[in-house]
Image 1 (tube, rainbow, N blue to C red):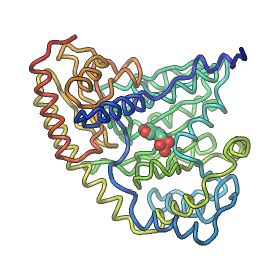
Image 2 (image 1 turned 135 degrees about the vertical axis):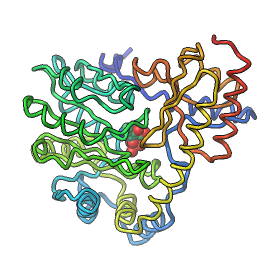
Image 3 (image 1 turned 180 degrees about the vertical axis):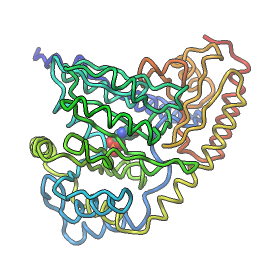
Length: 393
Ligand code: PLP
């Protein structure tokens, strides 16, 4: 029997996809399932973006593009970053990739190896840890705490850096907590990093345009002190409701850019040409679609937080960004994964257990409010009935 390499014994995955599969299977059996599990906008991609892809196909954009992405799109990304963040980026630093995930894949491959340490948020997007383990590097979790409003702690992050640390992964606005790290903490971290010039930074800002209550998104890109070692991860999936298009981009310092380009050439060659033209239409077209979507998420956020706080044993901090609520369920007596599983099987509500995002996620579940207000209200009612009538397993 041929044997695959040991690294595949260490690679993980995203349980949100397993929950989605189970929810879909239950629905196929005729069960009425409300899915608050998967992290994708429930809106269709805005029509002008879809039209741009159709036009690109009709216009004959059927071939390979440069591995780094078509120049107009890289210019479009640079202009968009300048418009939103006031930061100058050269199109030569921008890499178009098939989805936000690909940037973390590349960055972790670039800095992870046996003997290396990589810091990542816990609870956090599960692929960070999975890929760190795959490379043989040591995953070093940085606890993300409810009492800090789910912002990362600059002090704690800096205290975990050693001479072996090669990469620090940051994510704000955050999945799964909805936490947004305020400017003062970002600045403290940036200042502290001056003492650790051997450490690269991957800033996952895929929810950067989804903040609420006037909360500002502070991009790490705005700090010239770390630009020579900062990798920015962003993309179209969440901002423009384009998860299935597989469109992401990253900004890299020159020496790492070359390595990333080679990874592209060695794997996917280039991103789907028509999707790239659609991505350009998204950036250069009207932005009301983004504002409207965020305003709708904001309305649902209030509904979900208010409803969760009325459930027995549940308390939910108000998320400041992304489209997730991360309620504390420890006073229900349930373990988080057991509760998530029981809610799906018995109450028909799909949520994700906090431990699927790391050990510090115990005591919490994640709800995505990328679903209609009507469904959210129905889900909250079902959760309330369930908690009132079932003892912790
Ligand atoms: N980063 C975070 C924090 C996410 O939550 C996600 C998707 O859920 C991604 C990256 C990946 O996005 P994409 O679907 O574009 O690969």
